[in-house]
Image (cartoon, rainbow, N blue to C red; front, side):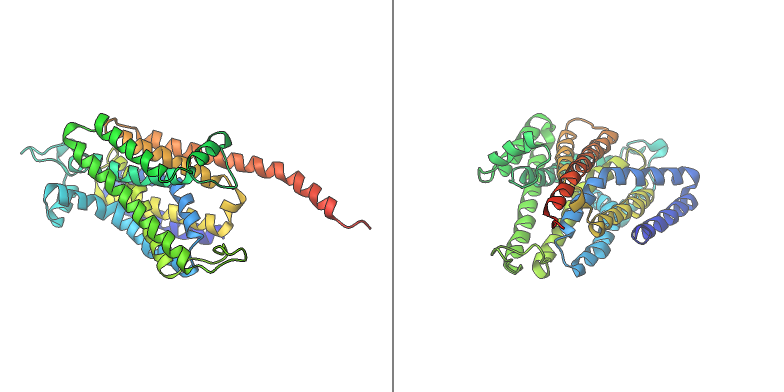
Length: 369
């Protein structure tokens, strides 16, 4: 199964590295490999969240996400999205933006000799509104998770009181909105303040809209289980699955922001970025997502979902803080890995602790001969 799931990603990694070498020699090959590793380390929590949503979708819509959705992730977010930002912010047409990306200033300077900004500079200048949009989208995703009461808790000393506080209606929106105002007031430059507020508000609106539509059709179309509620065995189809698909795409876009921006600390070449972040990184994230779903890993390691959401909360905070303070991409990656790793270890310890209890229960229920 592992070969079948990861085979395509491994093959595309080899192809990408070969293409990178032919394109720019050993330097391009090394940069491509580094970007691939960066994307996987930054997006492992994305794979966990993708898997939790993907499990709710029918097999048909799972295939749609793992084909069309991945194409959007690979080429749309890692190649077209950065170019689109430059199209909009610099008023260039697509051909001019792509030419600007392929022909940076000498010695990787921020500006050309005539004073015009480079592709990397234009994209970096758009960082405050990108970070505000992605940060607020991810912040609401995190807050809605921790403010919801659930049977299984990981950090009980913290999650239980937060869930109790979450009984206050729309608390996640209040907290997120307050955070956005504080970031705009104290971290954003004066000239960026209004754009940060608008971008952050749009991030909140998109989350509420997509999540709300998905929940609405989820309730309408699902069959009722034995207890009268939606059956957990029924997979989302039709409109419900479509809005879950949109939700996953926006979620992937929000996760991609830090990777795309961080890539420019390594190289501004859009071809290398597309190969490293897209064909290597995004494809491995897809394979990890499939593996988690097929193996039922989230059911076996019950705290992984919690760890992923805490990693998302950390990423949201980092994106918002980065509006005013540079945060090293290594910190971003390590924080996510730390939460996922801690959740995995906690899950393993929980399983080991429950095994003797399960054996004892089995012995007690066994018939006496």
